[in-house]
Amino acid sequence: MDGTLSLVLLLLFLWCLCSRRMERYEITAPAAFVLLGLLLGEGTGTLHLALSHETVKTLAEVTLVWVLFTDAARLSFRALRPELGLYVRLLGIGLPLCVGLGTLLASALLPGVSGWAALYVGAALAPTDAALGATMMVNPEVPVKIRRVINVESGLNDGIVTPLVVLALAGMASAGGRAGPDATGHAVVELAVGAAYGAVVGLAAGWLLRTTLRNGWAAEDFAGAGVLALSLLGYTSALALGGNGFVAAFVAGLAFGTMHGAPQRVLGYVEQSAALLSVLVWLVFGTLLLPEMAADFTWQAVLYAVLSLTVIRMVPVALCLAGSGLDARTVLFVGWFGPRGLASVIFGLLAVEELDPAGAHPVLPVLACTVLLSVLAHGLTSAPLARRYGRAVDDTGPAAAPADELPVRGMAGGGLHRVRRRGGPSRP
Image 1 (cartoon, rainbow, N blue to C red):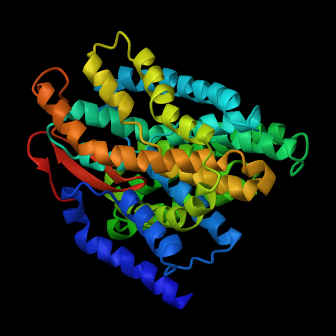
Image 2: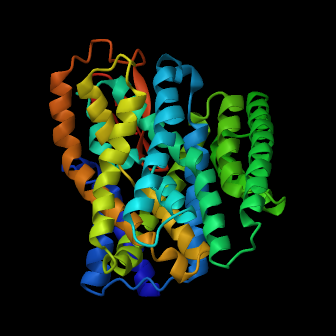
């Protein structure tokens, strides 16, 4: 295990050394570490990740908690106000339509998938991950407004669908005999408790940190570590109170960001920690989950993966953006850049832990196939489509955002790049 750990740490350090250069070659961190996992794991046998189920579960849970908390906390509602109508359309109309259409097609197309399992597939593959299109997100040719819309949608939709994923997993566990018949009722109660508790924790913690920083009691250099602990505290204490920890973390992040007022100053430490764990999740996906699931890539799974990235994503986006003032080219662009990434992988790892093998077998291959196809398709098309779209629109027109800068997730869950309106990517 020491040799394996040393190799993983070496890979992380080497990526640190060349990450900026890799961006120029349009290679994202998720794509790189999935490929490294495949080559060093199944391909050469060099990397042996003998991880216990408890270790994988802990990695998935902590990563999801930090991603949900930071994605919610770093939002500036004042900065989002100019495009609020677009966010409401995408998240309030488009996302439910995407989940519903994905559920219907999963039930009709995938063998052995119906009811709760179909809902799980539809919800787990609904969140988008802007990190897989990172080269597009830092391309100054694409209007800032469009990049911001895609980025904010990616930051919020995983937290919004998490309750549906939790309910679906509870229903699948109950149907498979791994949980009691009232498992879904308990899940609903846990979601409500988690949301209420997360709001209280986030508001209180945001007020306390803002007050102590203003009065000179707290050192800003240590505030990042405190917020890192806070995000996990919201999760663990919600579980202890009988609530859902993931929902508590997401709502706590929203409340904390709203109350604190300027979360960007203290979230850097949490975002970098989440970025580190997200890289490890991608490595585990390429080394363990993907090779195991590849043998079960049926034609139905491949077809559903193609439909998930096209019809299931793009039709709801087109419907919800109708009458928004965006032209057809922009609607197609936003519809295509809905990569499936980190959140879907983590939801898959959670299914491995929550369900018995027979219950997880019908749904995991389609998740793995969709994410793999998204890594390849969006990684290859991100830069050329961004350049083509950017040349076709006028960045000084109504599509441009009034703000000079906007935060862009360089990797899901962490790694902020600052993107200027006309100067290209600046240093983080």
